[in-house]
Length: 125
Image (cartoon, rainbow, N blue to C red; front, side, top):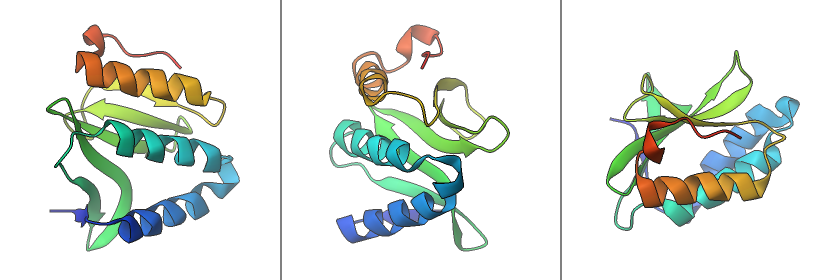
């Protein structure tokens, strides 16, 4: 089991940690936009969970949108943040780079909330 985010202070800790790790990738603004989208579009009364490895938190965040599990994870090879369905090995439904406009992030998460599966297609950013 991972680390459950139970309050704003824990979320703040996680976001600061991720921002520090991503500073050389120019992702700080992307992280801020994604954090807002995660909080805004996650299902009410569901938890955010950070995957841990050997009791250390990772860059993998699990959330539930419209009853479906999504995973937000950084792909170091692609230098992009991916949103995957069901698990870290699931189908990629969206990816974001430091150049992705906030409006596109909002649209993609809104589509996830509305459609759950994004009509089976990977959303372009």
